[in-house]
Image (cartoon, rainbow, N blue to C red; front, side, top):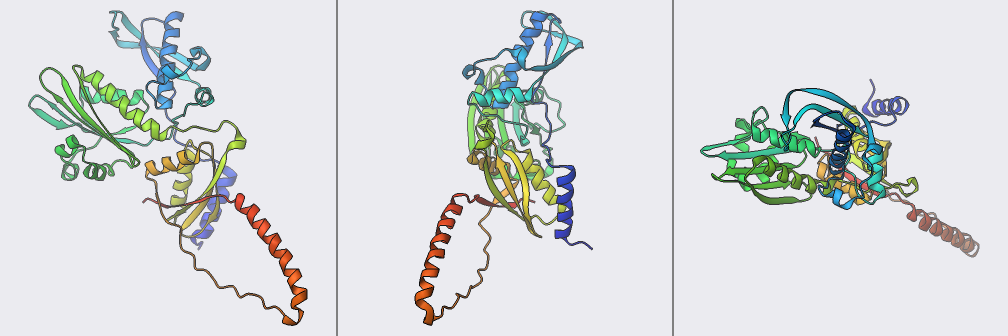
Length: 393
């Protein structure tokens, strides 16, 4: 029977032959839908322009990116579009009927390149699920929105999160959740119980909101908890839909600061590091590590260079700053940073020298020592930095 090392060797060999790169999860970051009054060229151009802005905001992680960016011609970035009739048309602010929906798909590579070439970061497809804890009090009713709830407020939150490309995880808020997290904990934004309860659904950030109707307007307080930082803000509005969109924009902007990456456009500027990931003792765990690394936008390539029964070492070539990559790992919570494993040093016996030929030996030894020192200095300049982590189970 194969041991783990043999199995993983065969597994890696198959990967190299049949699957050199394990792709990240595909999303619809570059797709936009909106209702329109007709199929005319003027209406279509307006939809292209609005959709382009929405996608640039989504992939930059910045709600005001269009104020900073020289806006290009929208048609240059449209990959394809189509129309579909609407069964129950609504009206716009001018009272015009909106009987069609236009579906637009934009060119991902072109839009990402445009941002990077102009000095702006890109928040790519690798996005952790955000656990949403939303406590609502509308009059005498107080409740926490759950996964299967049908609610205007929940629908508004879902649409706002989708607009910013943030995958959400709504809680069950069953007996188990209630025991771990009270409504008071949600309203207070208490970090420890929120993080503890959120682990049931995701290792990503947690977004908490407290929304209260006071008879004339909605009052709200919000908290975004991430591994690297926490944010708190308050909002007031007479319209719950507008309030929730403002809250989600603030949360998405804060996440964009953490997860959006400045990439390297030129291959010669790519940095290389090594990751020693411990607690990897099965093929499934190995696959999980490689899939995770290759899904990160900061990673250009990741290849295994050493595998044993408890750990794997990957050589990772980055397309962004090293600090961006390390920060992304910290906030994803897939790995925990650990100290370098202690390795027992074996004593090396120094060679003996014949004293009778000490004079002849001295000249022969000094020159090699100088050569070795020179080579060591040169090699130290090319040392690839190693970082040590443990896989979170």
